[in-house]
Length: 312
Image 1 (cartoon, helix red, strand yellow):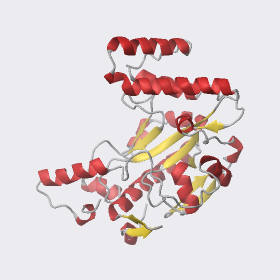
Image 2 (tube, rainbow, N blue to C red; image 1 turned 45 degrees about the horizontal axis):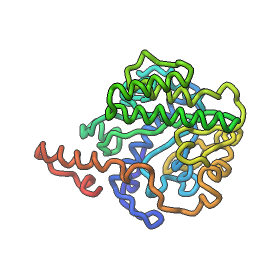
Image 3 (cartoon, rainbow, N blue to C red; image 1 turned 90 degrees about the vertical axis):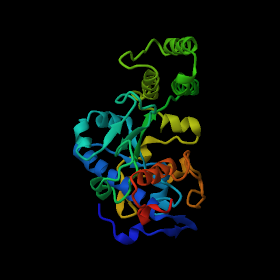
């Protein structure tokens, strides 16, 4: 992707200062997004701008000034297509697709396309990612049908939550207790036990499977299960998505749900066009720890810190 050098200047947007380093981080994420778009077109995968990325496209024609990541929605059928793409298709661009059923240590049910696992200050990497040295990526959020029956929905939510929490807490629990809880969970979900995976990864494979239980029905509304559990409002009628409409996003265009106004009202509320400095679940910027590692890397190698990295 091409970015005019002025794009990388720090600036105030809606009274919020966006640093030059954040601008380069935005550009790196958009580079990954551009590659994902090309691969998606090649394999017939449909996706939509999601969450803060969708809101930013509609309200700011780009990033929300205090946002630092990119989120996309994919219906589960497109997630399945995505999972079948040979890893080489991404590796050729220096990218890796992570999912609970593809990587043993990936403890999440949101899929993720990443440019690495370590800070990289090689000339090739910095040229490819517009001077951004951090490992980062874009989140690919599955959309699944949820039960029409509220009792079934509560059961699905409870089991999904239990599987994830047990996975997160696994290493901190005593062996006897965690195996007892695991056996109880497997029994409650009808004996499904993905033995091809080591524990605790099986728990995230289970959670991913629980999210998909009602997709054959094609009734009612869709949601991203983990996001819906966090905030019950995030439910959408599938017909709101349809044929994507393309919205300006910085210097590119992003596919958005056809009825993005209804989607944003359902997700955020009627006043979604009013800017509010609400941060994501992680600390802003997400690369705080990586930034400190970066400074240490320059120090260890007795290298001067370039000007573009002197401001967080």
